[in-house]
Image 1 (cartoon, rainbow, N blue to C red):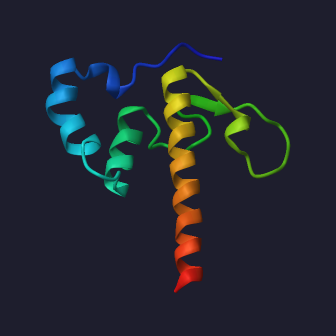
Image 2: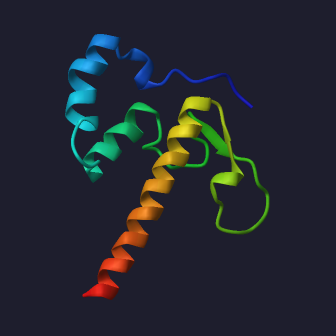
Length: 102
């Protein structure tokens, strides 16, 4: 389906990651929406088109495609995508619980 893509994260040096990216986006008490967006960008996940550089939809069925329908050209991007989807899922559940308690 494709070669492993060159992702922006591959251009970060260890010093740059630890000195800037990690400090700015990962070291806080919570991951803010802007932190998640930056994580998505460096793993090529900010483009949600079907034919983007990190993968493609591998399902011909007519339904709302889930994570299971994706074919990833980058294992790292696939893992990060799954984790971000879980974060969004649990945030939605927490939001629902909060709204019920109000």
